[in-house]
Image 1: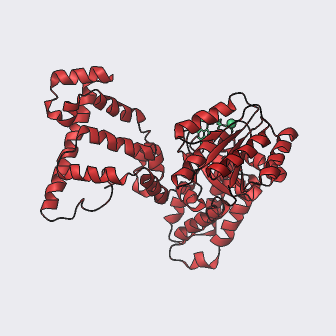
Image 2: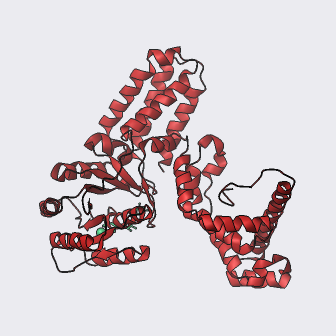
Image 3: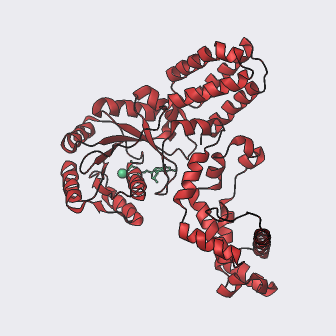
Length: 447
Ligand SMILES: Nc1nc2c(ncn2[C@@H]2O[C@H](COP(=O)(O)OP(=O)(O)O)[C@@H](O)[C@H]2O)c(=O)[nH]1
Ligand SMILES: [Mg+2]
Protein backbone atom coordinates (compact mmCIF):
# COMPACT_ATOMS: atom_id res chain seq x y z
CA UNK A 1 0.00 0.00 0.00
CA UNK A 2 1.38 3.39 -1.00
CA UNK A 3 4.82 1.83 -1.40
CA UNK A 4 6.45 4.81 -3.07
CA UNK A 5 5.17 7.39 -0.62
CA UNK A 6 5.99 5.16 2.30
CA UNK A 7 9.53 4.60 1.15
CA UNK A 8 10.21 8.30 0.57
CA UNK A 9 8.79 9.41 3.90
CA UNK A 10 10.58 6.65 5.72
CA UNK A 11 13.92 7.59 4.15
CA UNK A 12 13.50 11.23 5.09
CA UNK A 13 12.52 10.43 8.63
CA UNK A 14 15.29 7.89 9.04
CA UNK A 15 17.83 10.57 8.25
CA UNK A 16 16.25 12.91 10.78
CA UNK A 17 16.09 10.28 13.45
CA UNK A 18 19.80 9.66 13.18
CA UNK A 19 20.65 13.26 14.00
CA UNK A 20 21.54 14.38 17.50
CA UNK A 21 20.66 17.98 16.80
CA UNK A 22 18.46 19.48 14.15
CA UNK A 23 19.49 22.64 12.40
CA UNK A 24 17.03 24.83 10.58
CA UNK A 25 18.57 23.53 7.38
CA UNK A 26 17.88 19.92 8.36
CA UNK A 27 14.25 20.73 9.06
CA UNK A 28 13.83 22.66 5.84
CA UNK A 29 15.34 19.91 3.78
CA UNK A 30 13.14 17.29 5.42
CA UNK A 31 10.03 19.40 4.90
CA UNK A 32 10.88 19.88 1.27
CA UNK A 33 11.24 16.13 0.83
CA UNK A 34 7.96 15.47 2.62
CA UNK A 35 6.24 18.03 0.45
CA UNK A 36 7.55 16.47 -2.74
CA UNK A 37 6.70 12.96 -1.62
CA UNK A 38 3.11 13.98 -0.89
CA UNK A 39 2.70 15.85 -4.15
CA UNK A 40 4.07 12.89 -6.05
CA UNK A 41 1.55 10.70 -4.26
CA UNK A 42 -1.12 12.96 -5.74
CA UNK A 43 -2.22 14.52 -2.47
CA UNK A 44 -4.24 17.69 -3.00
CA UNK A 45 -1.74 20.59 -3.19
CA UNK A 46 -3.55 22.73 -0.67
CA UNK A 47 -3.69 19.87 1.77
CA UNK A 48 0.05 19.38 1.30
CA UNK A 49 0.72 23.04 1.97
CA UNK A 50 -1.26 23.07 5.21
CA UNK A 51 0.24 19.81 6.30
CA UNK A 52 3.81 20.95 5.81
CA UNK A 53 3.12 24.25 7.56
CA UNK A 54 1.71 22.50 10.60
CA UNK A 55 4.74 20.28 10.85
CA UNK A 56 7.06 23.22 10.42
CA UNK A 57 5.39 25.11 13.26
CA UNK A 58 5.72 22.20 15.61
CA UNK A 59 9.16 21.10 14.43
CA UNK A 60 10.77 24.45 15.20
CA UNK A 61 8.94 24.65 18.52
CA UNK A 62 10.43 24.68 21.98
CA UNK A 63 9.62 21.07 22.70
CA UNK A 64 11.63 19.71 19.82
CA UNK A 65 14.56 22.03 20.42
CA UNK A 66 14.80 21.04 24.04
CA UNK A 67 14.39 17.37 23.37
CA UNK A 68 17.35 15.04 23.54
CA UNK A 69 16.00 13.22 20.53
CA UNK A 70 14.76 15.96 18.23
CA UNK A 71 14.66 13.70 15.16
CA UNK A 72 12.45 11.26 16.99
CA UNK A 73 10.19 14.13 18.03
CA UNK A 74 9.73 15.21 14.43
CA UNK A 75 8.84 11.65 13.45
CA UNK A 76 6.23 11.73 16.18
CA UNK A 77 4.87 15.02 14.90
CA UNK A 78 4.63 13.72 11.34
CA UNK A 79 2.82 10.64 12.59
CA UNK A 80 0.35 12.76 14.56
CA UNK A 81 -0.31 15.10 11.69
CA UNK A 82 -0.71 12.26 9.22
CA UNK A 83 -3.23 10.70 11.58
CA UNK A 84 -5.07 14.00 11.96
CA UNK A 85 -5.14 14.43 8.21
CA UNK A 86 -7.03 11.17 7.83
CA UNK A 87 -9.45 11.98 10.61
CA UNK A 88 -7.75 11.21 13.94
CA UNK A 89 -10.26 8.75 15.42
CA UNK A 90 -11.74 5.76 13.71
CA UNK A 91 -15.19 6.71 12.48
CA UNK A 92 -17.51 3.84 13.26
CA UNK A 93 -20.50 2.85 11.23
CA UNK A 94 -23.84 4.17 12.41
CA UNK A 95 -26.50 1.51 12.68
CA UNK A 96 -29.37 3.56 14.05
CA UNK A 97 -32.91 2.91 12.81
CA UNK A 98 -35.15 -0.07 12.57
CA UNK A 99 -33.99 -1.44 10.35
CA UNK A 100 -30.89 0.70 9.85
CA UNK A 101 -30.33 1.56 6.20
CA UNK A 102 -26.91 1.92 4.63
CA UNK A 103 -26.96 3.50 1.21
CA UNK A 104 -23.97 3.17 -1.07
CA UNK A 105 -23.47 5.63 -3.89
CA UNK A 106 -20.68 6.28 -6.35
CA UNK A 107 -19.56 6.32 -9.95
CA UNK A 108 -19.68 3.25 -12.12
CA UNK A 109 -16.88 0.82 -11.47
CA UNK A 110 -15.89 2.41 -8.18
CA UNK A 111 -16.68 -0.80 -6.31
CA UNK A 112 -20.20 -0.24 -4.93
CA UNK A 113 -21.56 -3.71 -5.56
CA UNK A 114 -18.43 -5.42 -4.28
CA UNK A 115 -18.28 -3.13 -1.25
CA UNK A 116 -21.97 -3.70 -0.47
CA UNK A 117 -21.31 -7.42 -0.18
CA UNK A 118 -18.04 -6.91 1.69
CA UNK A 119 -19.80 -4.67 4.16
CA UNK A 120 -22.55 -7.25 4.62
CA UNK A 121 -19.92 -9.95 5.22
CA UNK A 122 -18.15 -7.72 7.70
CA UNK A 123 -21.36 -6.96 9.60
CA UNK A 124 -22.58 -10.53 9.58
CA UNK A 125 -19.28 -11.60 11.10
CA UNK A 126 -19.99 -9.28 14.00
CA UNK A 127 -23.36 -10.90 14.55
CA UNK A 128 -25.70 -8.82 12.37
CA UNK A 129 -28.18 -10.13 9.85
CA UNK A 130 -27.78 -7.84 6.86
CA UNK A 131 -29.98 -7.77 3.77
CA UNK A 132 -28.64 -6.55 0.44
CA UNK A 133 -30.90 -4.68 -1.97
CA UNK A 134 -30.21 -4.55 -5.71
CA UNK A 135 -31.20 -1.00 -6.58
CA UNK A 136 -29.01 -0.62 -9.64
CA UNK A 137 -31.60 -1.02 -12.37
CA UNK A 138 -29.53 0.60 -15.10
CA UNK A 139 -26.55 -1.56 -15.72
CA UNK A 140 -27.59 -4.81 -17.35
CA UNK A 141 -26.67 -7.70 -15.08
CA UNK A 142 -26.10 -5.46 -12.07
CA UNK A 143 -28.74 -7.19 -9.95
CA UNK A 144 -27.40 -10.54 -11.05
CA UNK A 145 -23.87 -9.57 -10.00
CA UNK A 146 -25.08 -8.62 -6.54
CA UNK A 147 -27.09 -11.82 -6.27
CA UNK A 148 -24.17 -14.03 -7.26
CA UNK A 149 -21.79 -12.30 -4.85
CA UNK A 150 -24.31 -12.43 -1.99
CA UNK A 151 -24.95 -16.08 -2.62
CA UNK A 152 -21.26 -16.86 -2.53
CA UNK A 153 -21.20 -15.21 0.89
CA UNK A 154 -24.35 -16.99 2.01
CA UNK A 155 -26.20 -13.71 2.45
CA UNK A 156 -29.73 -12.74 1.39
CA UNK A 157 -30.28 -10.31 -1.44
CA UNK A 158 -33.52 -8.63 -2.46
CA UNK A 159 -34.20 -7.72 -6.07
CA UNK A 160 -37.21 -6.89 -8.19
CA UNK A 161 -36.09 -6.34 -11.72
CA UNK A 162 -38.27 -3.92 -13.62
CA UNK A 163 -39.32 -1.92 -10.55
CA UNK A 164 -37.95 1.60 -9.99
CA UNK A 165 -34.96 1.83 -7.59
CA UNK A 166 -36.74 3.71 -4.81
CA UNK A 167 -39.50 1.11 -4.79
CA UNK A 168 -37.00 -1.75 -4.62
CA UNK A 169 -35.35 -0.10 -1.63
CA UNK A 170 -38.68 0.34 0.12
CA UNK A 171 -39.64 -3.26 -0.51
CA UNK A 172 -36.29 -4.43 0.84
CA UNK A 173 -36.81 -2.43 4.02
CA UNK A 174 -40.29 -3.88 4.41
CA UNK A 175 -38.93 -7.38 3.97
CA UNK A 176 -36.22 -6.65 6.53
CA UNK A 177 -38.90 -5.56 8.99
CA UNK A 178 -40.79 -8.81 8.53
CA UNK A 179 -37.79 -11.11 8.62
CA UNK A 180 -35.70 -9.26 11.16
CA UNK A 181 -32.87 -8.35 8.85
CA UNK A 182 -30.65 -5.48 9.93
CA UNK A 183 -29.14 -3.44 8.42
CA UNK A 184 -30.38 -3.10 4.85
CA UNK A 185 -27.56 -2.27 2.45
CA UNK A 186 -28.62 -0.51 -0.75
CA UNK A 187 -26.50 -1.01 -3.85
CA UNK A 188 -27.48 1.91 -6.08
CA UNK A 189 -26.74 2.70 -9.70
CA UNK A 190 -23.70 4.72 -10.69
CA UNK A 191 -22.94 6.57 -13.89
CA UNK A 192 -19.75 7.14 -15.77
CA UNK A 193 -19.93 10.81 -14.85
CA UNK A 194 -21.88 12.76 -12.33
CA UNK A 195 -25.17 13.89 -13.82
CA UNK A 196 -28.39 15.39 -12.57
CA UNK A 197 -30.56 12.40 -13.35
CA UNK A 198 -28.44 10.19 -11.13
CA UNK A 199 -28.31 12.72 -8.31
CA UNK A 200 -32.07 13.29 -8.46
CA UNK A 201 -32.72 9.62 -8.17
CA UNK A 202 -30.29 9.24 -5.28
CA UNK A 203 -31.88 12.22 -3.54
CA UNK A 204 -35.25 10.59 -3.89
CA UNK A 205 -34.03 7.33 -2.38
CA UNK A 206 -32.38 9.23 0.43
CA UNK A 207 -35.54 11.21 1.20
CA UNK A 208 -37.70 8.11 1.26
CA UNK A 209 -35.41 5.72 3.08
CA UNK A 210 -33.65 8.12 5.48
CA UNK A 211 -30.44 6.06 5.60
CA UNK A 212 -28.35 6.11 8.77
CA UNK A 213 -25.30 5.98 6.54
CA UNK A 214 -24.91 7.44 3.10
CA UNK A 215 -21.51 6.23 2.02
CA UNK A 216 -19.67 7.22 -1.10
CA UNK A 217 -17.71 4.39 -2.63
CA UNK A 218 -14.74 5.77 -4.48
CA UNK A 219 -11.71 4.29 -6.18
CA UNK A 220 -8.38 5.20 -4.56
CA UNK A 221 -6.54 4.46 -7.79
CA UNK A 222 -8.08 7.53 -9.40
CA UNK A 223 -6.37 9.87 -6.93
CA UNK A 224 -7.69 13.42 -6.97
CA UNK A 225 -10.60 12.38 -9.22
CA UNK A 226 -11.82 10.30 -6.31
CA UNK A 227 -11.60 13.35 -4.08
CA UNK A 228 -13.42 15.55 -6.59
CA UNK A 229 -16.17 12.97 -6.92
CA UNK A 230 -16.48 12.92 -3.15
CA UNK A 231 -16.81 16.69 -3.05
CA UNK A 232 -19.61 16.70 -5.67
CA UNK A 233 -21.52 13.85 -4.08
CA UNK A 234 -21.19 15.44 -0.67
CA UNK A 235 -22.49 18.75 -1.91
CA UNK A 236 -25.50 17.15 -3.57
CA UNK A 237 -26.39 14.48 -1.04
CA UNK A 238 -24.69 15.13 2.27
CA UNK A 239 -22.53 12.05 2.74
CA UNK A 240 -21.89 10.49 6.12
CA UNK A 241 -18.68 8.84 5.06
CA UNK A 242 -16.48 7.30 2.41
CA UNK A 243 -15.50 3.77 1.47
CA UNK A 244 -12.15 3.96 -0.27
CA UNK A 245 -11.65 0.98 -2.56
CA UNK A 246 -8.67 -0.59 -4.32
CA UNK A 247 -6.13 0.45 -1.73
CA UNK A 248 -4.46 -2.85 -2.53
CA UNK A 249 -3.58 -1.75 -6.03
CA UNK A 250 -0.79 0.66 -6.78
CA UNK A 251 -2.79 3.64 -5.66
CA UNK A 252 -0.37 6.35 -4.68
CA UNK A 253 -2.17 7.44 -1.56
CA UNK A 254 -3.43 10.82 -2.71
CA UNK A 255 -7.10 10.01 -2.21
CA UNK A 256 -6.66 8.44 1.21
CA UNK A 257 -4.67 11.42 2.41
CA UNK A 258 -6.85 14.19 1.00
CA UNK A 259 -10.45 13.07 0.97
CA UNK A 260 -11.08 13.82 4.62
CA UNK A 261 -9.36 17.19 4.56
CA UNK A 262 -11.08 18.31 1.36
CA UNK A 263 -14.62 17.11 2.06
CA UNK A 264 -14.74 16.77 5.84
CA UNK A 265 -16.19 13.27 5.36
CA UNK A 266 -14.52 10.50 7.29
CA UNK A 267 -13.20 7.39 5.55
CA UNK A 268 -15.08 4.57 7.24
CA UNK A 269 -13.83 1.55 5.34
CA UNK A 270 -11.03 0.61 3.00
CA UNK A 271 -11.32 -2.01 0.26
CA UNK A 272 -8.10 -3.98 0.04
CA UNK A 273 -8.77 -6.67 -2.53
CA UNK A 274 -11.28 -8.29 -4.82
CA UNK A 275 -12.36 -10.99 -2.41
CA UNK A 276 -15.51 -10.45 -0.38
CA UNK A 277 -13.66 -10.33 2.91
CA UNK A 278 -11.15 -7.74 1.72
CA UNK A 279 -12.60 -4.80 3.62
CA UNK A 280 -11.03 -3.13 6.64
CA UNK A 281 -12.50 -0.58 9.01
CA UNK A 282 -10.38 2.49 8.40
CA UNK A 283 -8.18 3.51 11.32
CA UNK A 284 -6.33 6.78 10.63
CA UNK A 285 -3.71 6.13 13.25
CA UNK A 286 -2.94 2.64 12.03
CA UNK A 287 -2.81 3.83 8.44
CA UNK A 288 -0.32 6.53 9.41
CA UNK A 289 1.78 3.90 11.16
CA UNK A 290 1.75 1.71 8.08
CA UNK A 291 2.79 4.57 5.83
CA UNK A 292 5.63 5.50 8.15
CA UNK A 293 6.81 1.91 8.44
CA UNK A 294 5.83 1.53 12.07
CA UNK A 295 3.71 -1.47 11.20
CA UNK A 296 0.13 -2.20 11.99
CA UNK A 297 0.19 -5.10 14.36
CA UNK A 298 -3.29 -4.41 15.64
CA UNK A 299 -4.87 -5.00 12.25
CA UNK A 300 -2.69 -8.06 11.70
CA UNK A 301 -3.80 -9.53 15.03
CA UNK A 302 -7.45 -8.77 14.30
CA UNK A 303 -7.19 -10.50 10.97
CA UNK A 304 -5.49 -13.50 12.47
CA UNK A 305 -8.21 -13.70 15.09
CA UNK A 306 -11.00 -13.37 12.57
CA UNK A 307 -9.71 -16.39 10.68
CA UNK A 308 -9.00 -18.26 13.85
CA UNK A 309 -10.98 -21.30 14.81
CA UNK A 310 -10.62 -22.15 18.47
CA UNK A 311 -11.74 -25.73 18.11
CA UNK A 312 -9.43 -26.47 15.24
CA UNK A 313 -6.57 -24.90 17.16
CA UNK A 314 -7.22 -27.11 20.16
CA UNK A 315 -7.27 -30.19 17.99
CA UNK A 316 -4.06 -29.11 16.36
CA UNK A 317 -2.42 -28.60 19.71
CA UNK A 318 -3.35 -32.15 20.71
CA UNK A 319 -1.93 -33.51 17.50
CA UNK A 320 1.29 -31.64 18.05
CA UNK A 321 1.55 -32.99 21.56
CA UNK A 322 0.98 -36.53 20.40
CA UNK A 323 3.26 -35.96 17.46
CA UNK A 324 0.52 -36.79 15.02
CA UNK A 325 0.95 -33.68 12.89
CA UNK A 326 0.42 -34.80 9.29
CA UNK A 327 0.72 -33.21 5.88
CA UNK A 328 -3.05 -32.67 5.92
CA UNK A 329 -2.67 -30.54 9.04
CA UNK A 330 0.22 -28.73 7.44
CA UNK A 331 -1.93 -27.85 4.45
CA UNK A 332 -4.78 -26.67 6.66
CA UNK A 333 -2.43 -24.41 8.58
CA UNK A 334 -1.12 -22.87 5.39
CA UNK A 335 -4.66 -22.22 4.25
CA UNK A 336 -5.53 -20.51 7.52
CA UNK A 337 -2.44 -18.41 7.24
CA UNK A 338 -3.36 -17.36 3.72
CA UNK A 339 -6.80 -16.25 4.79
CA UNK A 340 -5.16 -13.37 6.59
CA UNK A 341 -3.82 -12.03 3.34
CA UNK A 342 -1.04 -12.35 0.85
CA UNK A 343 2.51 -12.48 2.16
CA UNK A 344 3.01 -8.97 0.89
CA UNK A 345 0.02 -7.68 2.80
CA UNK A 346 1.24 -9.35 5.95
CA UNK A 347 4.75 -7.96 5.49
CA UNK A 348 3.35 -4.46 5.07
CA UNK A 349 1.75 -4.67 8.47
CA UNK A 350 4.98 -5.55 10.24
CA UNK A 351 7.21 -2.74 11.56
CA UNK A 352 9.80 -1.95 8.91
CA UNK A 353 12.62 -2.18 11.42
CA UNK A 354 11.83 -5.81 12.07
CA UNK A 355 11.60 -6.95 8.49
CA UNK A 356 14.87 -6.99 6.57
CA UNK A 357 14.75 -4.76 3.54
CA UNK A 358 15.41 -7.57 1.09
CA UNK A 359 12.47 -9.48 2.46
CA UNK A 360 10.20 -6.46 2.31
CA UNK A 361 11.13 -5.81 -1.28
CA UNK A 362 10.94 -9.40 -2.32
CA UNK A 363 7.94 -10.34 -4.40
CA UNK A 364 6.79 -13.35 -2.51
CA UNK A 365 5.70 -16.00 -4.88
CA UNK A 366 2.08 -16.81 -4.19
CA UNK A 367 2.46 -19.67 -6.64
CA UNK A 368 4.66 -21.39 -4.12
CA UNK A 369 1.63 -21.83 -1.88
CA UNK A 370 -0.38 -23.25 -4.73
CA UNK A 371 2.42 -25.67 -5.54
CA UNK A 372 2.56 -26.94 -1.98
CA UNK A 373 -1.19 -27.39 -2.05
CA UNK A 374 -1.07 -29.27 -5.35
CA UNK A 375 1.72 -31.57 -4.16
CA UNK A 376 -0.15 -32.53 -1.00
CA UNK A 377 -3.36 -33.05 -2.95
CA UNK A 378 -1.62 -35.52 -5.24
CA UNK A 379 -0.60 -37.74 -2.36
CA UNK A 380 -2.69 -40.65 -1.15
CA UNK A 381 -4.17 -40.41 2.36
CA UNK A 382 -1.66 -42.98 3.56
CA UNK A 383 1.23 -40.97 2.19
CA UNK A 384 -0.05 -37.85 3.89
CA UNK A 385 -0.19 -39.64 7.20
CA UNK A 386 3.20 -41.25 6.81
CA UNK A 387 5.45 -39.45 4.35
CA UNK A 388 8.33 -41.80 5.15
CA UNK A 389 6.85 -44.29 2.68
CA UNK A 390 7.22 -41.82 -0.19
CA UNK A 391 10.02 -43.37 -2.18
CA UNK A 392 11.51 -42.43 -5.52
CA UNK A 393 8.74 -43.78 -7.71
CA UNK A 394 6.05 -42.28 -5.50
CA UNK A 395 7.81 -38.94 -5.72
CA UNK A 396 7.75 -39.13 -9.47
CA UNK A 397 4.07 -40.00 -9.46
CA UNK A 398 3.23 -37.11 -7.11
CA UNK A 399 5.24 -34.62 -9.15
CA UNK A 400 3.50 -35.77 -12.31
CA UNK A 401 0.07 -35.63 -10.71
CA UNK A 402 0.54 -32.15 -9.29
CA UNK A 403 2.22 -30.62 -12.30
CA UNK A 404 5.36 -29.93 -10.28
CA UNK A 405 8.84 -31.38 -10.29
CA UNK A 406 10.46 -34.03 -8.13
CA UNK A 407 12.54 -31.21 -6.62
CA UNK A 408 9.34 -29.46 -5.51
CA UNK A 409 8.17 -32.64 -3.83
CA UNK A 410 11.56 -33.13 -2.20
CA UNK A 411 11.63 -29.59 -0.91
CA UNK A 412 8.20 -29.88 0.62
CA UNK A 413 9.01 -33.18 2.29
CA UNK A 414 12.26 -31.77 3.67
CA UNK A 415 10.46 -28.72 5.07
CA UNK A 416 7.79 -30.86 6.60
CA UNK A 417 10.42 -33.13 8.12
CA UNK A 418 12.11 -30.13 9.72
CA UNK A 419 8.84 -28.95 11.14
CA UNK A 420 8.08 -32.32 12.64
CA UNK A 421 11.51 -32.36 14.21
CA UNK A 422 10.95 -28.90 15.65
CA UNK A 423 7.62 -29.93 17.14
CA UNK A 424 9.18 -33.04 18.60
CA UNK A 425 11.83 -30.94 20.32
CA UNK A 426 9.22 -28.57 21.68
CA UNK A 427 7.24 -31.52 22.94
CA UNK A 428 10.16 -33.03 24.75
CA UNK A 429 11.11 -29.67 26.26
CA UNK A 430 7.61 -29.43 27.60
CA UNK A 431 7.82 -32.82 29.16
CA UNK A 432 10.92 -31.64 30.93
CA UNK A 433 8.89 -28.84 32.44
CA UNK A 434 9.58 -25.98 30.09
CA UNK A 435 6.61 -23.79 29.39
CA UNK A 436 6.84 -23.74 25.65
CA UNK A 437 3.88 -24.06 23.43
CA UNK A 438 1.67 -24.84 26.43
CA UNK A 439 -1.51 -22.87 26.93
CA UNK A 440 -1.14 -20.27 24.27
CA UNK A 441 -4.00 -20.18 21.86
CA UNK A 442 -3.45 -20.83 18.21
CA UNK A 443 -1.08 -23.19 16.53
CA UNK A 444 1.53 -22.81 13.90
CA UNK A 445 2.26 -20.24 12.62
CA UNK A 446 0.86 -18.21 15.45
CA UNK A 447 1.77 -20.26 18.47
N1 LIG B 1 -8.36 -4.87 -6.26
C1 LIG B 1 -9.56 -4.44 -5.87
N2 LIG B 1 -10.58 -4.49 -6.73
C2 LIG B 1 -11.78 -4.05 -6.32
C3 LIG B 1 -11.99 -3.54 -5.00
N3 LIG B 1 -13.29 -3.17 -4.91
C4 LIG B 1 -13.85 -3.46 -6.11
N4 LIG B 1 -12.96 -3.98 -6.97
C5 LIG B 1 -13.17 -4.40 -8.37
O1 LIG B 1 -13.62 -3.28 -9.13
C6 LIG B 1 -14.50 -3.69 -10.16
C7 LIG B 1 -15.79 -2.89 -10.11
O2 LIG B 1 -16.49 -3.20 -8.93
P1 LIG B 1 -18.06 -3.12 -8.79
O3 LIG B 1 -18.39 -3.49 -7.37
O4 LIG B 1 -18.74 -3.89 -9.84
O5 LIG B 1 -18.29 -1.56 -9.01
P2 LIG B 1 -19.67 -0.76 -9.14
O6 LIG B 1 -19.87 -0.48 -10.59
O7 LIG B 1 -19.42 0.51 -8.38
O8 LIG B 1 -20.76 -1.58 -8.53
C8 LIG B 1 -14.71 -5.17 -9.94
O9 LIG B 1 -13.92 -5.86 -10.86
C9 LIG B 1 -14.26 -5.42 -8.53
O10 LIG B 1 -13.76 -6.73 -8.35
C10 LIG B 1 -10.86 -3.48 -4.11
O11 LIG B 1 -10.92 -3.04 -2.97
N5 LIG B 1 -9.67 -3.96 -4.60
MG1 LIG C 1 -22.57 -2.16 -9.28
